[in-house]
Length: 362
Image 1 (cartoon, rainbow, N blue to C red):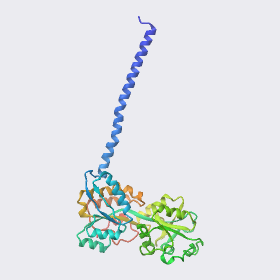
Image 2: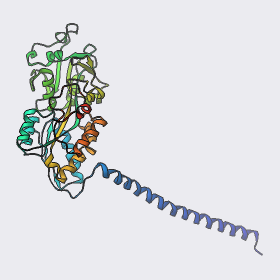
Image 3: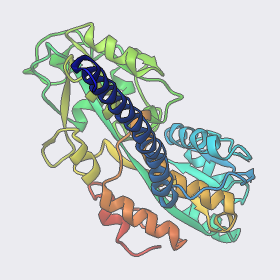
Image 4: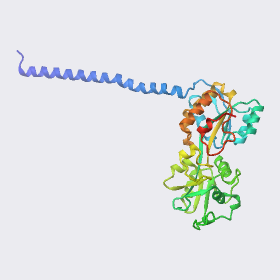
């Protein structure tokens, strides 16, 4: 007969054996789910990415882009991201200006023209003359915010004529205090900060405010770095400047944004007002114009597909405002159908991108 001590030892051995087996089974059972969890998301991501970024790693060729200095940062960022999956496709992005880009595009010398304004009738005629059919694709909205120092409690809204008084070449050395802009403003010394002459933002602001591109007083602090504009305006009670709306949003706690009266009352530079066209005249759509002939090449088609899907996340990164979802849907449909012509040519200000996308093509 087995003693109680021996029975207890046997029971303990049995329990230990069962526990060890359970532990081993548990470890073994966890291996399979962990493998599934590791591979499942990758599979899901691949499946989800296929319809939105339909690009093939074996693509090759050259895609030529030129035009607007304003749109160039978007196209460059998209081209760099696209190249990560498609190293065989070379995409140099030039920046000879919107007019220079259209000149090359309508001559058939480039595939894509970056443009910070719609194509003009005479440019469209030149394209037609050279048998260059184009697909007009808005890709972002540019909104410019006029900023003042946080202590500036008087300039809450300015009219375009008042902005012209601040920035006109005729005001150089003459308009130096805020009371000269509006009599009930304080006699506070004005300090001006803005983008330099190489910037598309500079071209746009001067044309919208002073009526002529590059027309501006020279006694202001020009820079290509919006952070310097921010710091300059933060540094003085009477300071003011202009920059992209997204840069203001990043610094809203330390700056004041001036509402703009473009003739229909004071309007703030909010994303909604910019995308609907209400923030006029300091908001505008930005475009790429693509040759219909170029779209037949697989590398170009894949690049534009990428631009209008994955590339859209880069718009805000480079300082612009994304298209509203309904407008982007129409843009993608226009591209997929390779619909040629323009709905933005000679369009009035204050009309949203979505509305203009629904107009008849010219």
